[in-house]
Image (cartoon, rainbow over all chains, first blue to last red; front, top):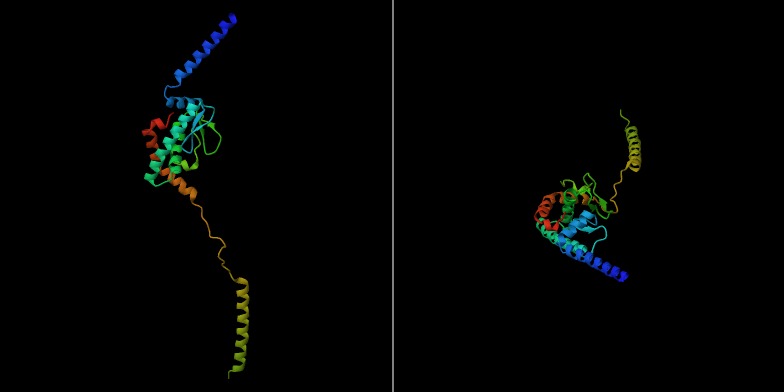
Length: 133
Length: 73
């Protein structure tokens, strides 16, 4: 009897936890990515796209990919207007995100390098970012 | 009276020496300019890339400001 009660209680607790997750998850996928960025599992890359640095849920991963697809579309438009390659437009944006958007404690990656956590000082940008500010 | 034979003889000796010296000079002091086998390549890609990216910084700033949903913080 006691054992049965315990099992029921456990199941109920698990259900409650699961419900909690379900309730908190739909709170806009955007903020889920922002949360992952704060947690250091998603970060900006010098190539102008978001990257997954740690373990993230499938929904966060999907949202990162969705954002990157939208970014790529925006880069493609601007690149066509300026007569540059999409990669150059994306890299220019990468300079900006690394210089201005990444906050201390968040992670970032330059080129194919390892993920790094931003400290209190500015990120050492690639040389081609010369005038990024 | 001028001894023409002597003068001509001297000139000939002199000419011979001159040709000899010139010949030596040509042999030893010649600078040979040879075209390289492969074309000379000057790689400017890095500089061009840098200029392009710098020029695009303003565009990038505007893009980020105008599309906050694409650039979560």
